[in-house]
Amino acid sequence: MQTTSAIEEALDKQPTLTRHFMTLAQEARLSHAYLFSGMTGCGKKALALSVAMRLFCETPTADGLPCGHCAECRRILAGDNPDVVVEAPEGQRIKVDQVRHIKDEFSKSAVEGKTKIFIIEGAETLTPNAANGLLKFIEEPADNRVIFLLTTNKSLILPTIISRAQLVEFSLLAPKAFQEVLTGAGISANQAALIGALTNSVEDATAMTEDDWVARVQAEVGRWYTQLVKGDATAFVTVQTGLMPLASDRSRQAILLDVVVILWQDTLNLKYLDNNQTIAFPKLRDVMVQTASQVDEVTLLRLVETALQTKSALASNMNFQNIMETMTLAGLDLLK
Image (cartoon, rainbow, N blue to C red; front, top):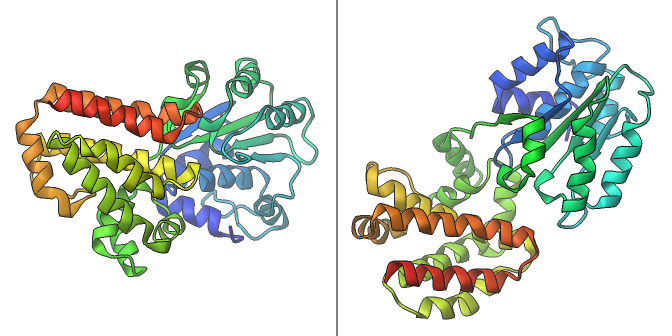
């Protein structure tokens, strides 16, 4: 992240929230814990860093923003300020040792300022023990400590943590505007439709297009969906032959599950909304419209719910193939 890019990104992606938090920081009215929830690339970390910059900035601007240029702003963005602690998942999880480090830092006084800031990315990946360890510090807030928990999936956060932190829902970037950014970056309109439903990050979008991965996802998940809605048990085989080769690591497995959720949500939306609305699988529109017209609302809702539950299963280290096969059998049963 370049020197001024954090505040610029926050203002560009979340202007209203950014101005609000700058006011809170300026007036010393920040709460002890926030849960920032939103899609990857929507500006969660940029805003958290901007708050830290505002608290330490040596020369704030006339309109109350961090300057982005002073030594303190640069140190925060470089990760060199001991009073700004940033943790992210190591591998697929945030582990107990990382929470132990956070707890140690909680017990220390601020070194250079009046406040210590904690930014925890991927909070949904906290192990149960790690989450419970963190909960104690959220339940018993200390003076001059502010913690930002960043998540792309609040449903995987302990309810006790959600209840003790201020939940801040980050809005999506305008879909059409972001798709224009993607097509401007050389991504096809067909792929941009799906990518725009998965992320607000151009960097992540570009990574998804490597080795034609997104194109293959659209083809294989589309084939699986078409078989499933027709009651064709071959969908079970497609999990092994078509989807597993795309699920090379945990990150891509999570994206594949998100894609399935999006498919069923779009199908449900097509039942009640304009058939010309933007969907993530433009080439599947006819099949999806037909499915929406033939399948009742209760069944579609259960299919969406079944797909959503797979995210928790993956977070619990359940085997991806087992997750997909179980969901496929459940889908065939619901649609028969």
